[in-house]
Image 1 (tube, rainbow, N blue to C red):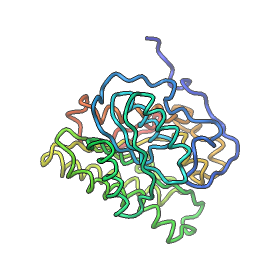
Image 2: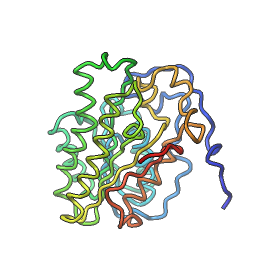
Image 3: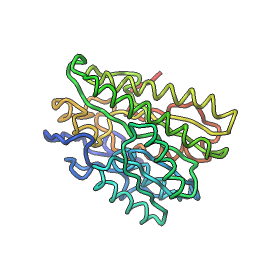
Amino acid sequence: MTLTDPRTKYPVISPPEQTQKNPGLDVEMIPTADRGEDSYVGSGKLAGRKALITGGDSGIGAAVAIAYAREGADVAIAYLPSEEEDANVIVGLIEDAGRKAVAIPGNLESRQECFDTVDKAIKGLGGIDILVNNASRQISHDNFLDISEDEWDKTMKTNIYAPFYLAQAAVPHMEAGSSIIFSSSIQAYDPSAHLVHYAVTKAAMNNMSKGLSMALLAEKGIRVNAVAPGPIWTPLQPSLGQPMEKLTQFGQDSEIGRAGQPAELAGAYVFLASEDASYVSGETLAVTGGALTP
């Protein structure tokens, strides 16, 4: 195998000024992100598994959906109705891998919608043994005083309430050996001043994954872990997720010298869901481009 320098595996991106309406679409990003469509090759690590991935239409969630399908899993993706265009692409890629795809549009801000989403996934897939709590809301604010009550509530409901309710809905249907994975963030450890509310939720999500791991491992044999990405080029960034001056140099101040691509996260989520991680629970796997975490 030829070694690849991680600093140059992908180009340093300098995105042009651009703004999308939140939550943003992969198809409208400049430059486009690599979700592993042309590069991820599976090896049967998740054969026969049944996964629900929230935010599975774009960005990291899409990369995970592609990888899971190519590893042999049937996959349900939950997404906002406004993201249908991206979702259709991912559904097609899951089916191209020869796996069942279930598309579940909806808004996970309500408890009932979370339970309905899990119910639809179970009916569509015939069960559930992987839950990836990935959907998140990220809106940048130059001054935390400008964060409105509505914005605070939406961020909390999407990033903290929803993963909790989704886990409550899924766990009664999960057997021993199942896996729950949270998408945390480097922001949980090193918060940016313009993402105060988002960073709070990622720290809480990180803590929630560890708490649930203690509650579920001994009792039910369900492993719970998290992945903490660094600066990854996803639709969250151009859809009001970054100040424009940071967007146009996105990821260039990382230790590796560039932004990460969603495809570079897929392997972490595959590992944590697979039997290779049978002795791993309560862990937060950092994929930060070199930034250190506690």
